[in-house]
Amino acid sequence: MKKIFKDKKVVVMGLGLNGGGVGVAKFFCRQGASVLVADLQTKEQLQKSIDELKNFKVEFALGGHRDEDFIDVDLIIKNPAVPHDSRYLKIAKEHKVLVKSDIEIFFELCKAPIIGITGTKGKTTTATLIYLFLKTKYPKTILAGNMGISPLGILSKINKGSKVVLELSSFELEDLQKSPDIAVITSFFPDHLNRYKTFDDYVEAKKIIFKHQVKDNYLILNLDDPKVAELAQEATARVRFFSKNKPFAPIIPKEGLKIFGDQNISNISAAIEVAKIFRISQKNIRKILLNFKGVKNRQEFVAEKRGVKYFNDTAATNPDSAIFGIKTFKQRFPAANLILIAGGVDKNLNYTDLASEIKNNVGCLVLLPGNVSDILKKEISFLLYRNLKVIPVNSMQEAVSVAAKEAEQGDIVLLSPASASFNLFKNEFDRGDRFVEAVNKL
Image (cartoon, rainbow, N blue to C red; front, side, top):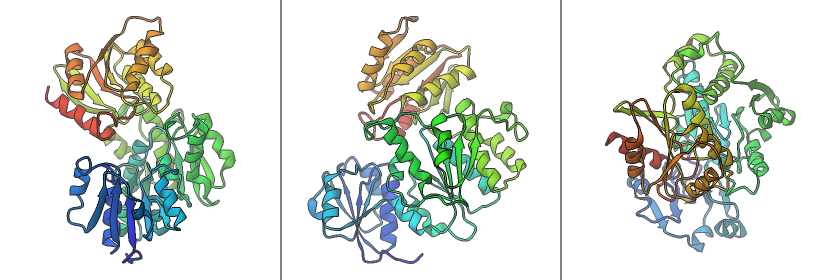
Protein backbone atom coordinates (compact mmCIF):
# COMPACT_ATOMS: atom_id res chain seq x y z
CA MET A 1 0.00 0.00 0.00
CA LYS A 2 1.02 3.63 -0.47
CA LYS A 3 3.44 4.93 2.19
CA ILE A 4 1.47 7.95 3.34
CA PHE A 5 3.33 8.16 6.66
CA LYS A 6 6.86 8.06 5.20
CA ASP A 7 9.31 10.26 7.16
CA LYS A 8 6.60 11.25 9.67
CA LYS A 9 7.45 11.35 13.37
CA VAL A 10 5.01 8.97 15.06
CA VAL A 11 4.64 8.24 18.77
CA VAL A 12 2.91 5.00 19.73
CA MET A 13 1.47 5.80 23.16
CA GLY A 14 1.07 2.50 24.98
CA LEU A 15 2.78 -0.69 23.84
CA GLY A 16 1.09 -3.17 26.14
CA LEU A 17 1.34 -6.95 26.09
CA ASN A 18 -1.75 -7.95 24.11
CA GLY A 19 -0.18 -7.46 20.68
CA GLY A 20 -2.09 -4.38 19.56
CA GLY A 21 0.71 -1.90 20.28
CA VAL A 22 3.24 -4.15 18.56
CA GLY A 23 1.05 -4.25 15.45
CA VAL A 24 0.77 -0.46 15.41
CA ALA A 25 4.54 0.02 15.73
CA LYS A 26 5.24 -2.48 12.94
CA PHE A 27 2.73 -0.78 10.63
CA PHE A 28 4.32 2.66 10.95
CA CYS A 29 7.85 1.24 10.64
CA ARG A 30 6.84 -0.45 7.38
CA GLN A 31 5.39 2.87 6.28
CA GLY A 32 8.82 4.46 6.65
CA ALA A 33 7.91 6.58 9.66
CA SER A 34 10.23 7.46 12.53
CA VAL A 35 8.65 5.54 15.43
CA LEU A 36 8.92 6.15 19.16
CA VAL A 37 7.11 3.78 21.53
CA ALA A 38 6.22 5.41 24.86
CA ASP A 39 4.84 3.43 27.79
CA LEU A 40 4.54 3.89 31.55
CA GLN A 41 5.56 0.28 32.09
CA THR A 42 9.22 -0.71 32.29
CA LYS A 43 11.37 -2.62 29.83
CA GLU A 44 11.21 -5.67 32.09
CA GLN A 45 7.41 -5.59 32.16
CA LEU A 46 7.17 -5.17 28.38
CA GLN A 47 10.01 -7.48 27.32
CA LYS A 48 7.73 -9.87 25.43
CA SER A 49 6.40 -7.06 23.21
CA ILE A 50 9.84 -5.46 22.84
CA ASP A 51 11.25 -8.75 21.57
CA GLU A 52 8.63 -8.80 18.82
CA LEU A 53 10.01 -5.48 17.55
CA LYS A 54 13.69 -6.43 17.56
CA ASN A 55 13.88 -6.46 13.76
CA PHE A 56 12.29 -3.01 13.43
CA LYS A 57 13.86 0.40 13.86
CA VAL A 58 12.02 1.61 16.96
CA GLU A 59 13.04 4.02 19.71
CA PHE A 60 11.67 3.33 23.19
CA ALA A 61 10.80 5.64 26.09
CA LEU A 62 9.69 3.31 28.87
CA GLY A 63 8.98 3.52 32.59
CA GLY A 64 7.40 6.98 32.37
CA HIS A 65 6.44 9.63 29.83
CA ARG A 66 8.48 12.70 28.85
CA ASP A 67 6.73 15.94 27.91
CA GLU A 68 9.00 16.51 24.90
CA ASP A 69 7.92 13.24 23.28
CA PHE A 70 4.43 14.67 22.81
CA ILE A 71 5.39 18.05 21.34
CA ASP A 72 7.60 18.01 18.26
CA VAL A 73 5.98 15.08 16.42
CA ASP A 74 3.53 14.64 13.54
CA LEU A 75 1.19 12.02 14.96
CA ILE A 76 0.40 10.29 18.24
CA ILE A 77 -1.36 6.93 18.15
CA LYS A 78 -2.88 6.43 21.56
CA ASN A 79 -3.66 3.03 23.00
CA PRO A 80 -7.43 2.71 23.63
CA ALA A 81 -6.75 2.27 27.36
CA VAL A 82 -5.14 5.73 27.63
CA PRO A 83 -7.67 8.02 29.35
CA HIS A 84 -8.81 11.08 27.44
CA ASP A 85 -7.81 13.36 30.32
CA SER A 86 -4.17 12.25 30.18
CA ARG A 87 -1.93 15.28 30.73
CA TYR A 88 0.29 14.10 27.86
CA LEU A 89 -2.62 14.17 25.43
CA LYS A 90 -3.37 17.69 26.66
CA ILE A 91 0.25 18.66 25.98
CA ALA A 92 -0.01 17.23 22.47
CA LYS A 93 -3.23 19.10 21.73
CA GLU A 94 -1.81 22.36 23.11
CA HIS A 95 0.99 21.99 20.55
CA LYS A 96 -1.47 21.09 17.80
CA VAL A 97 -0.16 17.53 17.43
CA LEU A 98 -2.59 15.17 15.73
CA VAL A 99 -3.84 12.44 18.11
CA LYS A 100 -5.59 9.38 16.74
CA SER A 101 -6.19 5.71 17.55
CA ASP A 102 -5.23 2.79 15.34
CA ILE A 103 -8.94 2.08 14.82
CA GLU A 104 -9.47 5.62 13.49
CA ILE A 105 -6.59 5.25 11.04
CA PHE A 106 -7.87 1.85 9.97
CA PHE A 107 -11.37 3.12 9.19
CA GLU A 108 -9.88 5.99 7.18
CA LEU A 109 -7.72 3.66 5.05
CA CYS A 110 -9.78 0.47 4.77
CA LYS A 111 -11.50 0.06 1.39
CA ALA A 112 -13.25 -3.23 2.23
CA PRO A 113 -16.67 -3.65 3.87
CA ILE A 114 -16.37 -3.72 7.67
CA ILE A 115 -18.53 -5.79 10.00
CA GLY A 116 -18.07 -4.37 13.51
CA ILE A 117 -19.10 -6.20 16.67
CA THR A 118 -19.41 -4.71 20.14
CA GLY A 119 -21.22 -5.46 23.40
CA THR A 120 -20.35 -6.41 26.96
CA LYS A 121 -20.50 -10.16 26.41
CA GLY A 122 -20.25 -12.33 23.32
CA LYS A 123 -18.10 -10.08 21.11
CA THR A 124 -15.25 -12.46 20.42
CA THR A 125 -17.37 -15.57 19.89
CA THR A 126 -19.79 -13.69 17.62
CA ALA A 127 -16.95 -12.08 15.63
CA THR A 128 -15.19 -15.42 15.22
CA LEU A 129 -18.36 -17.14 13.99
CA ILE A 130 -19.08 -14.34 11.50
CA TYR A 131 -15.51 -14.62 10.24
CA LEU A 132 -15.81 -18.40 9.80
CA PHE A 133 -19.19 -18.10 8.07
CA LEU A 134 -17.96 -15.45 5.61
CA LYS A 135 -14.76 -17.33 4.78
CA THR A 136 -16.83 -20.14 3.28
CA LYS A 137 -17.91 -17.72 0.53
CA TYR A 138 -15.25 -14.99 0.74
CA PRO A 139 -11.86 -16.68 1.40
CA LYS A 140 -10.12 -13.30 1.80
CA THR A 141 -12.19 -12.40 4.88
CA ILE A 142 -10.01 -11.04 7.72
CA LEU A 143 -10.60 -11.04 11.50
CA ALA A 144 -9.08 -8.31 13.71
CA GLY A 145 -9.78 -5.81 16.46
CA ASN A 146 -10.00 -6.08 20.23
CA MET A 147 -8.32 -9.49 20.39
CA GLY A 148 -4.61 -8.76 20.27
CA ILE A 149 -4.52 -8.01 16.55
CA SER A 150 -4.13 -4.38 15.47
CA PRO A 151 -6.23 -3.83 12.35
CA LEU A 152 -3.44 -1.67 10.88
CA GLY A 153 -1.40 -4.82 10.38
CA ILE A 154 -3.99 -6.26 8.01
CA LEU A 155 -4.36 -3.24 5.70
CA SER A 156 -1.76 -4.61 3.28
CA LYS A 157 -3.70 -7.89 3.04
CA ILE A 158 -6.96 -6.23 2.03
CA ASN A 159 -7.84 -6.38 -1.65
CA LYS A 160 -10.79 -6.90 -3.94
CA GLY A 161 -13.12 -9.46 -2.40
CA SER A 162 -11.93 -8.89 1.18
CA LYS A 163 -14.36 -8.53 4.06
CA VAL A 164 -13.18 -7.33 7.48
CA VAL A 165 -14.69 -8.60 10.74
CA LEU A 166 -13.70 -6.25 13.55
CA GLU A 167 -14.29 -6.70 17.28
CA LEU A 168 -14.58 -3.27 18.93
CA SER A 169 -14.40 -2.40 22.62
CA SER A 170 -16.00 0.68 24.16
CA PHE A 171 -12.51 2.17 24.57
CA GLU A 172 -11.84 1.80 20.83
CA LEU A 173 -15.24 3.18 19.84
CA GLU A 174 -14.72 6.43 21.77
CA ASP A 175 -12.46 7.79 19.03
CA LEU A 176 -14.39 6.55 16.01
CA GLN A 177 -15.52 9.07 13.37
CA LYS A 178 -16.89 6.45 10.96
CA SER A 179 -19.14 3.44 11.44
CA PRO A 180 -18.89 -0.10 10.07
CA ASP A 181 -21.10 -1.10 7.16
CA ILE A 182 -22.69 -3.71 9.42
CA ALA A 183 -22.76 -3.06 13.17
CA VAL A 184 -23.64 -5.79 15.67
CA ILE A 185 -24.42 -5.12 19.34
CA THR A 186 -24.53 -8.29 21.46
CA SER A 187 -25.47 -7.09 24.95
CA PHE A 188 -25.17 -4.37 27.58
CA PHE A 189 -24.16 -5.06 31.19
CA PRO A 190 -22.35 -2.77 33.64
CA ASP A 191 -18.60 -2.86 33.00
CA HIS A 192 -15.54 -0.59 33.05
CA LEU A 193 -17.15 1.72 35.62
CA ASN A 194 -13.63 2.54 36.75
CA ARG A 195 -13.40 4.47 33.44
CA TYR A 196 -17.00 5.60 32.91
CA LYS A 197 -18.86 7.59 35.55
CA THR A 198 -22.15 5.76 34.95
CA PHE A 199 -23.57 2.76 33.12
CA ASP A 200 -25.29 5.19 30.74
CA ASP A 201 -21.90 6.72 29.86
CA TYR A 202 -20.63 3.22 29.05
CA VAL A 203 -23.66 2.58 26.82
CA GLU A 204 -23.12 5.91 25.05
CA ALA A 205 -19.59 4.82 24.15
CA LYS A 206 -20.92 1.55 22.74
CA LYS A 207 -23.56 3.39 20.68
CA ILE A 208 -20.86 5.16 18.66
CA ILE A 209 -20.59 1.98 16.58
CA PHE A 210 -23.71 2.99 14.61
CA LYS A 211 -23.72 6.79 15.00
CA HIS A 212 -22.17 7.40 11.57
CA GLN A 213 -24.06 4.74 9.62
CA VAL A 214 -26.09 5.57 6.50
CA LYS A 215 -29.39 4.14 5.32
CA ASP A 216 -27.80 1.37 3.22
CA ASN A 217 -25.91 -0.01 6.24
CA TYR A 218 -27.18 -2.61 8.71
CA LEU A 219 -27.57 -2.49 12.48
CA ILE A 220 -27.99 -5.93 14.11
CA LEU A 221 -29.51 -5.75 17.61
CA ASN A 222 -30.24 -8.21 20.43
CA LEU A 223 -34.00 -8.42 20.87
CA ASP A 224 -33.57 -10.09 24.28
CA ASP A 225 -31.73 -7.11 25.78
CA PRO A 226 -34.18 -4.19 26.16
CA LYS A 227 -31.42 -1.59 26.35
CA VAL A 228 -29.95 -2.90 23.09
CA ALA A 229 -33.27 -3.42 21.30
CA GLU A 230 -34.44 0.15 21.99
CA LEU A 231 -31.51 1.48 19.96
CA ALA A 232 -33.53 0.69 16.84
CA GLN A 233 -35.30 4.01 17.47
CA GLU A 234 -32.00 5.88 16.97
CA ALA A 235 -30.85 3.98 13.89
CA THR A 236 -30.39 5.50 10.45
CA ALA A 237 -29.41 2.11 8.97
CA ARG A 238 -31.58 -0.92 8.26
CA VAL A 239 -32.27 -2.77 11.52
CA ARG A 240 -32.37 -6.52 12.05
CA PHE A 241 -32.90 -8.34 15.33
CA PHE A 242 -31.53 -11.60 16.68
CA SER A 243 -32.66 -13.59 19.71
CA LYS A 244 -31.75 -16.74 21.57
CA ASN A 245 -35.45 -17.56 21.28
CA LYS A 246 -35.48 -17.07 17.52
CA PRO A 247 -35.32 -20.63 16.21
CA PHE A 248 -32.50 -21.63 13.91
CA ALA A 249 -33.40 -25.34 14.04
CA PRO A 250 -33.76 -25.49 10.23
CA ILE A 251 -30.00 -24.83 10.12
CA ILE A 252 -28.83 -26.92 13.07
CA PRO A 253 -30.54 -28.39 16.15
CA LYS A 254 -29.19 -27.11 19.48
CA GLU A 255 -28.30 -30.70 20.42
CA GLY A 256 -25.66 -30.74 17.69
CA LEU A 257 -23.61 -27.85 19.09
CA LYS A 258 -20.26 -28.16 20.84
CA ILE A 259 -20.79 -24.87 22.70
CA PHE A 260 -23.64 -24.43 25.12
CA GLY A 261 -25.58 -21.94 27.24
CA ASP A 262 -28.05 -19.17 26.40
CA GLN A 263 -25.31 -16.62 25.70
CA ASN A 264 -23.72 -18.83 23.07
CA ILE A 265 -27.11 -19.48 21.46
CA SER A 266 -27.48 -15.69 21.32
CA ASN A 267 -23.99 -15.33 19.80
CA ILE A 268 -24.81 -17.92 17.14
CA SER A 269 -28.09 -16.17 16.32
CA ALA A 270 -26.28 -12.84 15.86
CA ALA A 271 -23.68 -14.39 13.57
CA ILE A 272 -26.35 -16.14 11.50
CA GLU A 273 -28.17 -12.82 11.04
CA VAL A 274 -25.00 -11.38 9.48
CA ALA A 275 -24.51 -14.54 7.39
CA LYS A 276 -28.00 -14.05 5.94
CA ILE A 277 -27.05 -10.59 4.68
CA PHE A 278 -24.17 -12.14 2.73
CA ARG A 279 -26.35 -15.08 1.65
CA ILE A 280 -24.11 -17.71 3.20
CA SER A 281 -25.66 -21.11 2.54
CA GLN A 282 -27.33 -23.04 5.35
CA LYS A 283 -25.10 -25.97 4.45
CA ASN A 284 -21.94 -23.95 5.17
CA ILE A 285 -23.38 -22.44 8.35
CA ARG A 286 -24.29 -25.92 9.57
CA LYS A 287 -20.82 -27.25 8.80
CA ILE A 288 -19.11 -24.45 10.74
CA LEU A 289 -21.40 -24.78 13.76
CA LEU A 290 -21.03 -28.55 13.99
CA ASN A 291 -17.24 -28.14 14.22
CA PHE A 292 -17.01 -24.95 16.30
CA LYS A 293 -15.56 -25.67 19.76
CA GLY A 294 -15.59 -22.12 21.05
CA VAL A 295 -12.89 -19.49 21.55
CA LYS A 296 -9.79 -19.60 23.72
CA ASN A 297 -10.22 -18.12 27.22
CA ARG A 298 -14.02 -18.22 26.96
CA GLN A 299 -15.46 -21.29 28.68
CA GLU A 300 -12.56 -23.16 27.12
CA PHE A 301 -12.22 -26.83 28.05
CA VAL A 302 -8.66 -27.34 29.31
CA ALA A 303 -8.39 -30.93 30.50
CA GLU A 304 -9.95 -33.75 32.48
CA LYS A 305 -7.80 -34.89 35.39
CA ARG A 306 -8.86 -37.83 37.57
CA GLY A 307 -12.46 -37.44 36.47
CA VAL A 308 -12.54 -33.66 37.12
CA LYS A 309 -13.11 -31.28 34.17
CA TYR A 310 -11.29 -27.93 34.13
CA PHE A 311 -12.58 -24.91 32.18
CA ASN A 312 -10.88 -21.57 31.48
CA ASP A 313 -13.22 -18.56 31.38
CA THR A 314 -10.65 -15.88 32.20
CA ALA A 315 -12.36 -13.46 29.78
CA ALA A 316 -15.21 -13.20 32.32
CA THR A 317 -13.95 -9.90 33.74
CA ASN A 318 -17.25 -8.67 35.20
CA PRO A 319 -19.92 -10.17 37.51
CA ASP A 320 -22.54 -10.70 34.78
CA SER A 321 -20.12 -12.74 32.69
CA ALA A 322 -19.28 -14.90 35.70
CA ILE A 323 -22.98 -15.40 36.48
CA PHE A 324 -23.50 -16.51 32.90
CA GLY A 325 -20.61 -18.95 33.25
CA ILE A 326 -21.95 -20.48 36.46
CA LYS A 327 -25.45 -20.86 35.02
CA THR A 328 -24.11 -22.34 31.79
CA PHE A 329 -22.13 -25.04 33.56
CA LYS A 330 -24.93 -25.88 35.99
CA GLN A 331 -27.26 -26.32 33.02
CA ARG A 332 -24.72 -28.43 31.17
CA PHE A 333 -23.62 -30.51 34.18
CA PRO A 334 -26.56 -30.36 36.63
CA ALA A 335 -25.30 -33.20 38.83
CA ALA A 336 -21.73 -31.90 39.08
CA ASN A 337 -20.34 -29.99 42.04
CA LEU A 338 -18.94 -26.67 40.80
CA ILE A 339 -15.67 -25.32 42.20
CA LEU A 340 -15.20 -21.68 41.20
CA ILE A 341 -11.90 -19.79 41.04
CA ALA A 342 -12.65 -16.05 41.13
CA GLY A 343 -11.36 -12.72 42.39
CA GLY A 344 -9.07 -9.93 41.28
CA VAL A 345 -9.38 -6.16 40.89
CA ASP A 346 -12.73 -4.36 41.01
CA LYS A 347 -13.93 -2.08 38.19
CA ASN A 348 -16.47 -0.31 40.43
CA LEU A 349 -19.11 -2.95 39.72
CA ASN A 350 -21.86 -4.50 41.86
CA TYR A 351 -21.26 -8.06 43.08
CA THR A 352 -24.50 -8.71 44.97
CA ASP A 353 -26.13 -10.85 42.26
CA LEU A 354 -22.92 -12.81 41.72
CA ALA A 355 -22.66 -13.55 45.44
CA SER A 356 -26.21 -14.90 45.39
CA GLU A 357 -25.46 -17.04 42.31
CA ILE A 358 -22.32 -18.41 43.98
CA LYS A 359 -24.10 -19.24 47.21
CA ASN A 360 -26.86 -21.04 45.28
CA ASN A 361 -24.81 -22.99 42.75
CA VAL A 362 -21.15 -23.20 43.78
CA GLY A 363 -19.83 -25.89 46.11
CA CYS A 364 -16.46 -24.31 46.83
CA LEU A 365 -15.16 -20.80 46.12
CA VAL A 366 -11.41 -20.32 45.68
CA LEU A 367 -10.47 -16.63 45.83
CA LEU A 368 -7.44 -15.08 44.14
CA PRO A 369 -5.81 -11.98 45.70
CA GLY A 370 -7.57 -8.65 45.11
CA ASN A 371 -10.31 -6.43 46.48
CA VAL A 372 -13.04 -8.31 44.58
CA SER A 373 -12.32 -11.30 46.83
CA ASP A 374 -12.95 -9.13 49.89
CA ILE A 375 -16.16 -7.80 48.34
CA LEU A 376 -17.42 -11.30 47.53
CA LYS A 377 -16.66 -12.61 51.02
CA LYS A 378 -18.58 -9.70 52.53
CA GLU A 379 -21.54 -10.08 50.14
CA ILE A 380 -21.74 -13.83 50.72
CA SER A 381 -21.68 -13.34 54.50
CA PHE A 382 -24.94 -11.36 54.23
CA LEU A 383 -26.76 -14.29 52.63
CA LEU A 384 -28.61 -16.87 54.71
CA TYR A 385 -28.38 -19.84 52.37
CA ARG A 386 -26.44 -23.09 52.83
CA ASN A 387 -22.86 -23.05 54.02
CA LEU A 388 -20.27 -22.37 51.33
CA LYS A 389 -16.62 -23.28 51.59
CA VAL A 390 -14.49 -20.20 50.80
CA ILE A 391 -10.72 -20.61 50.45
CA PRO A 392 -8.43 -17.59 49.83
CA VAL A 393 -5.13 -18.29 48.01
CA ASN A 394 -2.07 -16.30 46.96
CA SER A 395 -1.42 -17.50 43.41
CA MET A 396 -2.98 -19.29 40.45
CA GLN A 397 -0.80 -22.33 41.09
CA GLU A 398 -2.18 -22.54 44.63
CA ALA A 399 -5.74 -21.91 43.41
CA VAL A 400 -5.63 -24.85 41.01
CA SER A 401 -3.93 -27.07 43.59
CA VAL A 402 -6.60 -26.27 46.19
CA ALA A 403 -9.41 -26.76 43.67
CA ALA A 404 -7.98 -30.15 42.67
CA LYS A 405 -7.87 -31.26 46.33
CA GLU A 406 -11.46 -30.16 46.91
CA ALA A 407 -12.78 -31.75 43.71
CA GLU A 408 -14.11 -35.27 43.42
CA GLN A 409 -14.72 -37.36 40.32
CA GLY A 410 -17.45 -35.77 38.19
CA ASP A 411 -16.86 -32.24 39.52
CA ILE A 412 -16.19 -29.10 37.48
CA VAL A 413 -13.43 -26.56 38.20
CA LEU A 414 -14.18 -23.23 36.54
CA LEU A 415 -11.93 -20.17 36.35
CA SER A 416 -14.40 -17.29 35.96
CA PRO A 417 -12.82 -14.36 37.85
CA ALA A 418 -15.52 -11.65 37.49
CA SER A 419 -12.81 -9.02 37.72
CA ALA A 420 -9.73 -7.43 36.19
CA SER A 421 -6.38 -9.15 36.47
CA PHE A 422 -3.66 -6.52 36.66
CA ASN A 423 -2.81 -7.01 40.34
CA LEU A 424 -1.36 -10.50 39.83
CA PHE A 425 -1.08 -11.01 36.06
CA LYS A 426 -0.02 -9.08 32.96
CA ASN A 427 -3.58 -9.23 31.63
CA GLU A 428 -6.57 -11.57 31.60
CA PHE A 429 -4.97 -13.74 28.91
CA ASP A 430 -1.85 -14.21 31.03
CA ARG A 431 -4.21 -15.21 33.86
CA GLY A 432 -5.80 -17.82 31.61
CA ASP A 433 -2.40 -19.11 30.49
CA ARG A 434 -1.29 -19.51 34.11
CA PHE A 435 -4.47 -21.47 34.85
CA VAL A 436 -3.90 -23.79 31.89
CA GLU A 437 -0.25 -24.31 32.91
CA ALA A 438 -1.25 -25.13 36.49
CA VAL A 439 -3.93 -27.59 35.35
CA ASN A 440 -1.53 -29.34 32.99
CA LYS A 441 0.95 -29.78 35.85
CA LEU A 442 -1.56 -31.68 38.00
